[in-house]
Image (cartoon, rainbow, N blue to C red; front, side, top):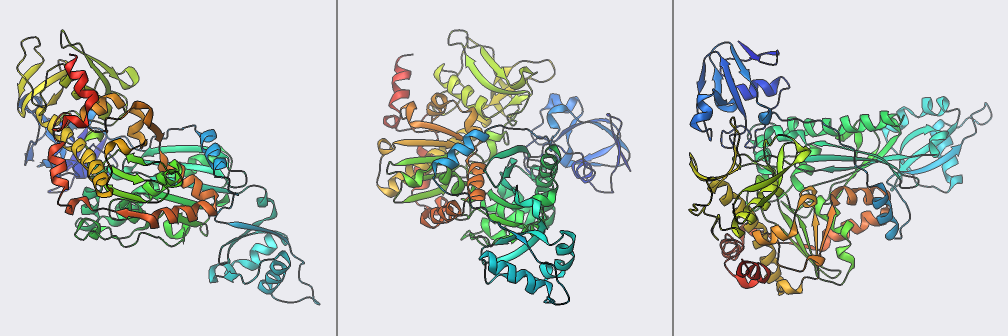
Length: 623
């Protein structure tokens, strides 16, 4: 059977195969936050012609069905069909976005007062060629020169020795020998490669992948590239991907997907600067525990089953060839250590980059994303937890939710008199949906203007015609359009309140566990890409962030890639990352008796206990 797209492309579809699966199999990807279970309602396509079996319409409204919209994951063609893919349904992956914070990174490295000491050390050797009188073997000749250089007891793998003779002669007996601690010889290159060595710092996020190409001699960042993590094709959150990897047999598929993302960026960066991939001699990877397992092809199944145990938190230094990275196959790959099931190397890297572990002040570190990881502590102790906030701030589970890309409503202001919203859209484009920062703005504004009550319920209001009844209940129209209005429903608001309640409950519970109140927090570090768009005032009104003076909040951006960069360049900082991991105490909130109490109290705007939000209380009294 044929699956024709209105764009002109014709694909095949197998008997009993749904449209989403057929498209994905042939390289056309749709937003499918739920992994194709029919619950998110994001993989909309319009049936233009043909007959199909429709198992479910999910969240599609009747007027959308009347226009021919169906869920691709729940629609099985019975013969040849033609479909149109709306712009909002397309999942664009592979876009490289250059970022430029090289000076910030290097200045941070300098502030640690450490020597640059990458994973690979170099011995630049001029070896006497063999003669009839000096006829010891090639390996013994190399060992002799290494001892003169001051390096003894080197181990040599079979792979290294098998290529040694040709490498020595091709280099004219003037070589650069790369070796790691142990010591172990890992590769031979030409003498000129002693001038510049290159490595990769890699952040594997649930949503994005970032790769830094770094000069290992002077610490300069040569270039940076990023892309969406293509694993999003299989679901937005780590639980959905774990299920796909284990129950769906997709472990290798998920691994190959993210490795391809990394390799595509690496190839682009190398070509841009005239480097061969063989010149990249080491890599450091940071990511949450699930992402680290998927990167190495390790079964993450037991992470989601009580008692929530990963295969490993401290990964051996394996080779790039094992990782399938398209760099020098013998290059060592260091993985920033993880803490537990849902707190991983990205948070260890973040704590390292923030220097929370070095200062006596009590600090709160928050990586606000799908997992909502938090850490509280100072230079003496650190306690950490993951709040399971869910992917709603990335758009999943929200009627018109989307990521912070072009067309997303990113800011909302509501006139207190007319209740008319003023929206800001990324790229000044036509609104296609609303992203996390826009959701926070909208709900806080709706609360302050009386459109919703403390429970997040829409209140009857004769001043506005934007409150209406929808198929999922009552909703507020943020943007009117003849084809597709953008709304926030009461169900959306409830999902967002659940996410913020999980985050705030995690903070308050950790503080109670260590015997401190909110007033004891002297610094709040906000990490993650989402933090760049966050309006602290609005997040406090929502009840997601503690009600503290604004000067206590510091935005750090992507601290996972920053920590990976630091570990790439310094043995001391790799050891410090391991010390951070070893001193962090993990609290499993899902089995805590008190978590549900804290969570239920935080399900209101901003909280049931208004004494925790005095600034918001004063603001409400002034209205």
